[in-house]
Image (cartoon, rainbow, N blue to C red; front, side):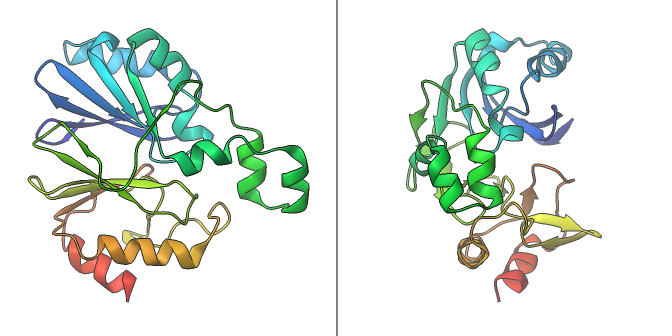
Length: 219
């Protein structure tokens, strides 16, 4: 479904992904669980496009419902895969480190297959799509969580840094969030942006009073 001009949301296995269409090139934000390429291929076909039109895949963070499909989609499309270095490092975690810090974040990282050829994406990078998409390093949910902000179109893709509960914008899932205090500080950064639409990984877009919602949550 096209939720904004040239911004499509597609339901993959375990999470939503976003297709950012810029001419003949498509940027995919997140890739669902392994096996998601079939769903993505079908959606692209309805658009009159194919996997070969995907030139880059941006991972908002290193959880398996966001990067599990990267391996197959990357191989089929030849797209560049982008992941923040902090999550790339986290995915190299060893069993003894998990035992020393036995909590959901390290356990999930141990069980997640890391992209083999991910390139780093970090604070201050700008992706050449839709007039320039700013990368914001927003740690908390994971060490390397990133959000993508469009100053021109006034939307932000937040991955799992935010949820919607009973229609309201809320903090991330506490069980799967590494550091809630850090996540709150990251949300505070989003509250400083000129945002009209919030795009989530598991919920419908939030459009009415998006900036006010972010400010209220940050305070």
